[in-house]
Length: 243
View 1 (cartoon, rainbow, N blue to C red):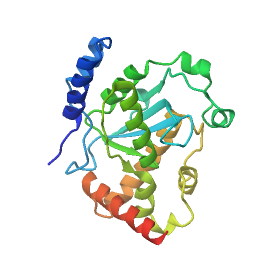
View 2: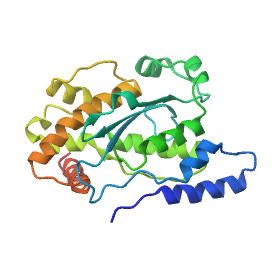
View 3: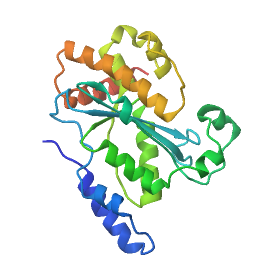
View 4: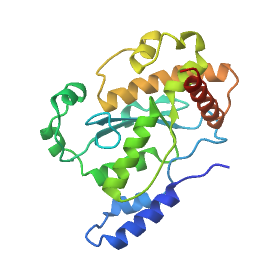
């Protein structure tokens, strides 16, 4: 049975409002709360729309670092929705270290011109509603997104995106030993390496990889997103066991 954690989101948000009288969501945010949210993979066929997302952060410490931009791309049976990608820089006050700036290329001025974090998160949830979530190295993005939602909205959510870092070696085991990160998998399939370490560009590159993986999954007999997710979890357990 497919289920959505959107009702949980609404419940926590209502409680948050009652405790923070100074916080009033605008009409658009309220409309989002009244709609259904992203799906947990179950019996949805692989033709069901998917959403690949990527986060840029101030660093790699999931306890202390912050989300500063969100990029996402939708994928349907007809292909990538190039004219309907998602990208938001978050207006957060952080100390951007030089090393991290060399990776994501964002400055404090960029953040100052960005979107209110609460609105950016609501817009992202609206963009991703009723889509299966995926990411490359999804565990990091899951934790960082969970932290951002708790910090900016006072809500507790824990989506479980499918991880392409496990999906790729599952479907192409002959290539797994030589390819570990996103760049190497893109190179293995001769996909263009454009402006990497930008949330929108990384999400697009990952979606292009996903199209190849889905074609292979169908050839191998996978029919639903739930089957893919379960196989990826087993792949993760095997990798941890042998490492």
